[in-house]
Length: 427
Image (tube, rainbow, N blue to C red; front, side, top):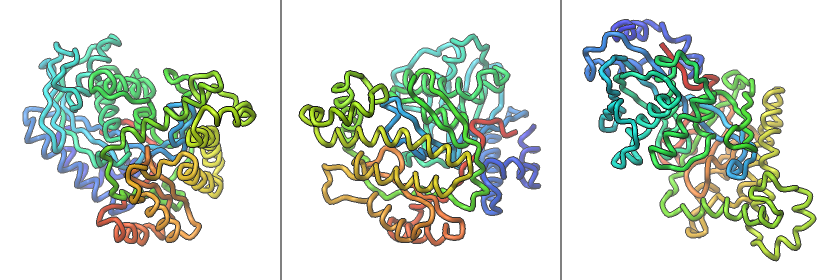
């Protein structure tokens, strides 16, 4: 397909069917995606006018539904791909380089003969691209060059994993064109994690990349982190009558590193008292039996966080089962329970360093007041600042967004859906 043919297809609604599948059937959303892809194609043609044949790829952001802070203790997590994504217009060639221009960022140029880590790329997109290419080469894949223009509507810092989507996007491009799609979704997630850990310089688990790559609702069991058990939950959220709303409560993420690290540290102190490294390997009944002695060695905060882990890991599985059997009321009940547990037991709705700041709690309180028992609401992501997540009936979504924008500022509430596809070739 040429840029001209893509533009015609977009203008004539030729991609509306695939857009409906990955973005939902809203007329406004279809129009937005047509304009977005047209703009990306135009910018690609200006950057790389010599590329006649093009390909189009997409990889979604992700949201954690259940399993708040359970993965680092090898527990279970329910997460889902969302309708915000990273998109790439790509032209392939045999010039021995990869050129990627991401909207809002400087161009990255990767020489395929230099796929070792570059110190000056640490923390930048070029490191991810180089790391993905290097991993495929180590796998024995004969890689080649390409030019790409990428654009993403996944806001950085929103807790929707913009970096994982970019990793999956680049890995999907390489796998589809140079590897005939043989790697598959799980391996692509691992390739993305490798690029982030080794080249980008950020230690991370596998959840973000896995959900972006697999798509849909995904239950992940991290009992064996190197080979997590992946289970796709078959549920079409687009027909549920609900929207997923992510609300930025505008809390500052600065100086929160200690708050985040104290959660796994607290849980590990309890695990040690039970003779194991991670709480997943502990006996829950033994924990309650030995609780008086554990409290002599561990803080009560650590004890409460351990209780949260046991309940939350189990609850993530129950959420998946409720969805799979269509028990939406039970699913929402579990989501609300997860939020309450995060607030009372995990204690990650505010930082002790900022005694007067309670943005997440305000957002949850306002949401519950507005929803009046409908849907569900809970903290989103790591907590302490940032975003909340709400499942809102479609007939209430505009009013809900207006109310939360009134409280936290225009554009604070994003109305999303859950998409079934992970990283894919769109055209």
